[in-house]
Image (cartoon, rainbow, N blue to C red):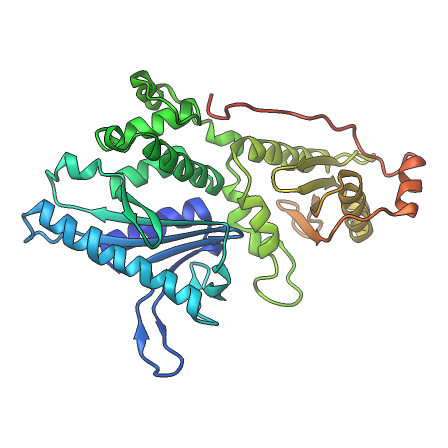
Length: 382
């Protein structure tokens, strides 16, 4: 990989997680055994599919406009079209993600959210007019995002969850469509500042750019990298190495306000697992993803009951929330090594159906759940 490709792989692994980022992407044609070149980087997260092509300007290339037209608007665009063609026409393409797991990337065919992105690293003193060109408009595959690699880096620095990056790319397309000429006269910093203020794309307001100065990220409130980094170790695999992917997929889809609620409940569960008496489980239900989460603290003296507690409370929360999916986690101190806590997870995905027995359980005031309340956050960046 080139230096720029390595940088992109690192950025995407941090934002989208290693499980969903692919940078070792060449594959062999099944009939001819010919080596075919896939996109430089792809991200696949449930219904999100991002296809990246990376270009690095050679020091000997002194004509910025010529290089931009040939390498970005022609070659990189053609390579993205080829990758999307591979996805559509091949029954199987196995490529390796950043965790070292090989997955069939053609399953991304038909994803609801497909984004086409070119990241380029030019020489110093690169033309500002070219840098402000936001898109290539293809009659075949639609808008293709164009990013100077420094601009993409800073977008990911401010918007550090996959959901937010996807929302920003949608916003970027909509604002560009509102006024293409004016959009290409503005720097990426304006677009990002506008997004932090409001998702509305029917106007321009110069003062929005100051949001990049006044913005407070508060990442400590929703940073769960320590949980994610050891996720594969913490979950008890029973059948195959990617068995935990559905769980981490739902976590990866959370935005910063949802992650804040998630992290608070994990922290409370760790803290309350030190209490010998029974502690009510903590819960979340997210209509946006139709997924519930239940967090169950257990004292180590009651840890032998973790399987029943996890199953019963996960199914009960799923039923009461009328959710399609539900994730439960039970947390207790490791009795063999008191410095650590055990995390056991359960994932359920099934259509909600009326259950007379479950109705009676809730009528009898069991299971012991806290009352839930709705919370609406209009702007998570303010």
